[in-house]
Image: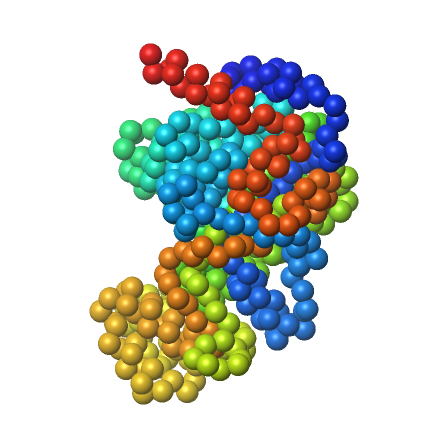
Length: 452
């Protein structure tokens, strides 16, 4: 993988031996993606902070510059794979596509272009690192479901920092993994010079790249449930990644995803959704602080799509109640486990985990009727909590709602207004003087050669 990138570095130099561009070229780019986070979700988080901490703004708010339309090539409602492919490659593709075009041909990514320019690169996520968004920056497969292949490509990509969950995709079954080829990719990475870490102690001790940190077998915990002694926060991973990449004389490209914002919205999980948004905003704040002190650093933040169809206010009432969410101490997942696996009484769980001390007969009956099915039980718990908070959900899937766009630093003026999701990738490529089309042509030619 590295060899073709070295060859392409010369091509990029030729393609960009043009007069200076209007915008200043950033030295470092940090791209944030709040998976499944629409405008209402940011309002939810802001209103919560105002009600509970007297804080009037999110760290993101001062840098709102526009909006982004999110549709895929085959649907007005995108999935995360097509959305991330638009950001990473600047092309529209079908739902499920991982850095391939509508014909299934590989298309080059910003991360590959950055590597070809000699920049350091990193990916940070709270999902499995092989999940759709980080995958689209670091692999080329026809379907997002091919996570074992994605892991294999990520290890061979030469990425300097990989932080997230998903250890199971890198190791064989005898180590608790899901690889069916018998390979231990973490051992292979260590032999190639990577520092491999799987716990908080290793994370704290890490001082130099290249590094792979996988802190859970699958996705990392929701922020509201996170064991701080076991897993770093998104902000901590972001700061560590920046520290590790900062010394590269050619700058760095870093993608950071608040992955589980989306997962909580799929489950209509108020506490999971809220606290992962706040964790994401804290990570953005860390990057903005670095950018303010480090000239040449561009921070761009957006979302791949909205999830859940969240509304603040429901049933004709002109109100919503953040204080209801303030009493929640867990996401829905441990509440379901407490009821189903531990057999704890409904009233006790709702009191201890949701702060509801006046559960009505009707609410209790709704929960009791769903005890035999975890999905129905989670939905019943969500309904009780959401009705009390006066928030609504229209779907357990994605929607076509436009999403917010934020930018700070050199080149940020290029992101103003209403943009297509492919414009994010294309604009970042232009600012970094990366010719994605030339890189894609070389990548496809290499793929043809490998197939012969």
